[in-house]
Image 1 (cartoon, rainbow, N blue to C red):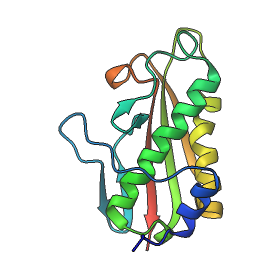
Image 2 (image 1 turned 180 degrees about the vertical axis):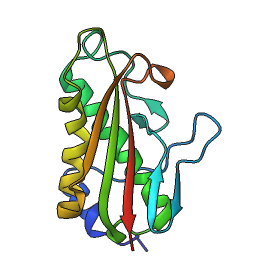
Image 3 (image 1 turned 180 degrees about the horizontal axis):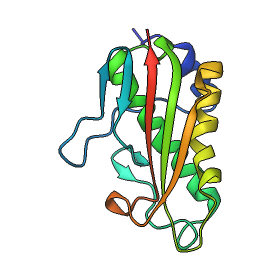
Length: 157
């Protein structure tokens, strides 16, 4: 019998997206931890089926549209990490904080636009519960040459 989709997963399905299996850690950490009704994810990269979808820096090897797409993929992996802890994504009562790290070439300043790839996905998937605080941070390098990394903090009941 097929698994019943949560309302969150139904919304993702309407966007032709599905929550993937949790991405395997690339070092000594776990994808997410829970404490006192809050799930904290580790930084998630834009992996699909174990393959990093792009490498390079925004403003050099990658354009803004690619960065936005990569932020969405990384965010979907962060959602998968949340699901691995709480099971049913409908238990999320609020996305509290999103941090998006953007590997940037010198002079690149569109970090907030790249982070919208994650923020807009969360808004669509979680509705009002997806409205969140956010940081969009430019960095020199990310693991494996990834252009973005996304971490979430969510409350659930």
